[in-house]
Amino acid sequence: MGEAKRKKQARKQAAWPEGDRFRGMIDLHMLAPVAAINGARIRELTGDERIPADAQISLRAFRAVVGDRAFHAGFCLGNGTEFSAIGVAVIDRLGMEAPGAPLHVVPVVHQDIAWDIVLRHLRSFTGQALLFAFPDSDTYDAGIAETAYSPDVRVFRESGEQLERLTAAKRRQIREKKAAMLDRPPPPLFYPMPGAAQEDAPWIFRLVTPAGKTIRTAVWNGRRNYAHDFPDDIVRWVGGDTIAVVQVDSPVGINRRSSLDLTHKLSNDFDGVIHWARDTETFQSILKSFIRLDLESVSPPDLPENWKPDITILTANGRSD
Image (cartoon, rainbow, N blue to C red; front, side, top):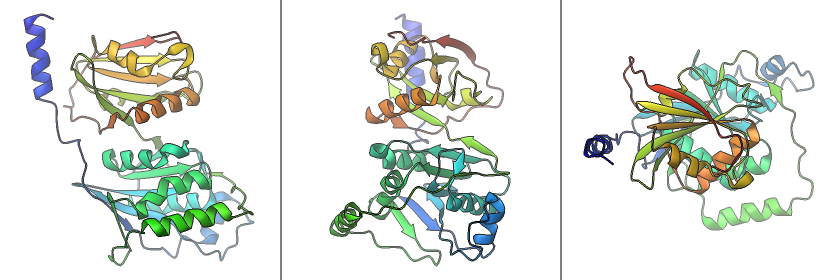
């Protein structure tokens, strides 16, 4: 490495912002019930007349305060594009708190890292409305249970009273009771949410390469054959003067492919790397590998409006990287 390049890299490392780091307390304030969100309202939103009009509704929807950021967050069953009847009500409730704001949706697929996914997004989210969607009750429980136990989270009633954290013994009793249940409830029906402007919540990681360079890398879900276009501002997720957008055709581990190794190699020539996964399986595989490697989740960098990086689109083609 030439001396000029070494000095330039050293200046970039020294200027790396600390503002997107957050390891403090997360406060979740329950949103007060709204009489207008009832069984009749859910019937209207879903078009399902089988839902009782007088059904009692209990929603997990909160105002989250994380450092100097405040936003609204909800939890429900869903697959990211369709949601349970209660999930539809949660979305409706969040829309009341953040009218007109896009709803950033995080599908949580893997039960073993469900809480890690929730915690990472609560710590790094910079939008106004955030929704966690879980495919089944087991994954849902894995993703929300820690809000009652974690030392990183405080939960408050709508009255302002803080809930006590459950003890380890109580947590064990709940798990034992759940394991003993023979007649588990069937999975609920999922419904599309009409009228809600939904976006995928950004997945952004920070890593230090073997050469000592610190960069951001993001992951985007192409859904199928890259048909799901990524947002116009996705390059702002990673920043830098030069950005690589790499199309990834296969899950991590196929033909010995490693997205981390690929990121390290691309970092030699680029300041930011975006992994554009061919399909949801590949997207989830990259996410799971980065989370298990304990890469730090961060927010997008602060960039000037006239920022114009050089962007290069590459293909991994499923070959060994």
